[in-house]
Each structure stands twice: as structure tokens, then as C-alpha cells.
Amino acid sequence: MNVDELLKKAKDGLETKMVYGEPYHADGVTVIVAATVGTGGGGGDSRDEKGRSGEGAGFGLSAKPVGAYVIKDGKLRWEPAIDVNRLMTTFGMIAVAALFAATRFVKLKRDTEPELS
Picture (tube, rainbow, N blue to C red):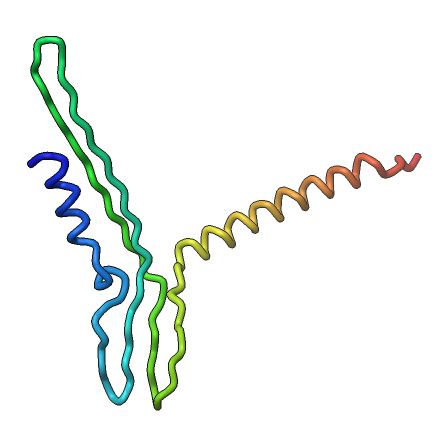
């Protein structure tokens, strides 16, 4: 497969279906899930001094859920997806920063207090 064929196949595979899922209907509620999709790719070819040629290509795809549209009783609402891992990482970093700041504050306060004799 050459580079052009690979890129055409990759392009053909990128459809709206990758971002929005098929509607799911249950008990009078319709849910349409959504994701963010990122792609990247590249390729090239070359010829050496003996006239031999070579080519190569690569393509990557990532998808991450972002939420869902929920339709109930004729009303549409957006329900964002919660990334628990990212949330816990953020809280952890805040806790470490707060602990570091508190330690520095206590040390600074102790170093600036006059000694009692």
C-alpha cells in the first residue's frame, strides 16, 4: 500500500459517526453520545543514490468521550462526561501544592519570629 492509498483510507474512515454515536432510545429518553476525535498522519518517499526507492507512512487516531445529548419530554440537555482520572490528578496536584505552601509558610514564620530569651 502506498502513501496515497493509506491517506485515502484514513480520510474515508473519518466520519461524523466517529464523533456522534447512534441515538439510543429507552423509556421515552433518547441519548446521543459525543466524543472528541483527533487524528494525525504523515508519510514520505525517498530514492537513494543507487536508484532504489522506499516509502512509508503512519496514521494515528484518538477518541475521548466528552458527553451526551439527552432528549426527554421534548427537551434537549447536554450531560458532560466526567474524567475521574483527570479530576483526581488535579485535586492531588492542588493538595501537594497546598502542603508545600503551608510548609514554606510555617518555616518562614518560624525564621522571622524573634527568639525569646
